[in-house]
Image (tube, rainbow, N blue to C red; front, side, top):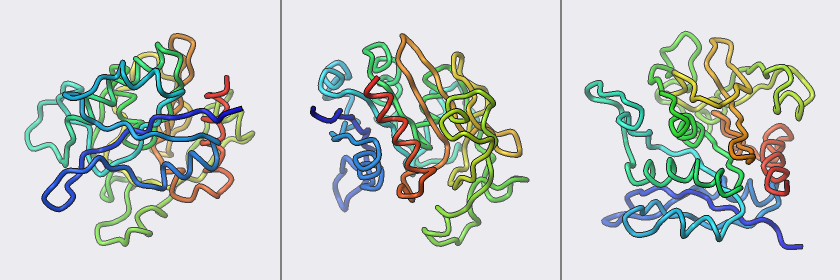
Length: 242
């Protein structure tokens, strides 16, 4: 039996004098290893290709983390000088993919930016005050090394009876935290699966059109061999297999 094939969203990033469709290998290899899938990249080129052309070719969608932020206009925030960088083409592709994938029966997994995209796609909003000066910093201090950034950690409480609490069989996890933004108003139809000690939502789930969705604010792909991290991708693999 062939493995499910997932579409992995790609960002638009500068590559010298050119622009590349880019996604870090760690997302792809984590999914291949622990969800037991094959993967295809989905370029964020909404002016050149349609979501309707993508979905028949994949069994599910993974929305990855990124250095870019969701454009605040996507959730009605017109405050001046919002922090970037931005990737408007990824916004268009990712936000369009969420409901279209669920309507087509294709499960969705979101990580970090993908988690935030899902909240916006469900009509929610984002906040931008969760960095190293917050009461509970959700990002390592400025000047931290790349490794230190991804190893910055805090606990999360799992919602009793939720899909994560059921899958992990316990009440808390310790997760890495690499984000300045997060959920402000929760999107309609999303269920809270985990919260940080300061009340910030850290994971959500949904079942729309009968199709499951799971998203986490942390980065399970960073150390995907860790059993807790691997389980997120194993859950995605189970979603893909019904």
